[in-house]
Image (cartoon, rainbow, N blue to C red; front, side, top):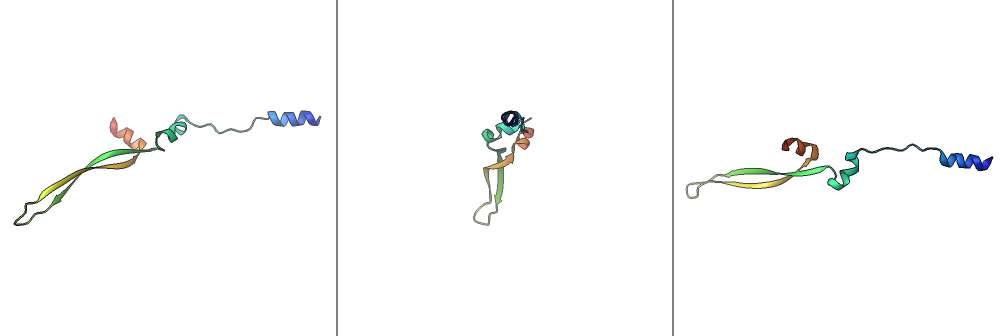
Length: 73
């Protein structure tokens, strides 16, 4: 009888948490963080001897991946 009780406990289904497809692929996609390039400008004022000019550059900014997907479409 004890043998069957032990066998029944082994075969008893345990609760399992199912994961979604996005949760499965999240570690491979960089953990849910994406990057995008932002164009920036800064005006450098001049004086009587040197004219002013505009300094421009591109920065990489971290954004959530859902936000990056929305901006693409």
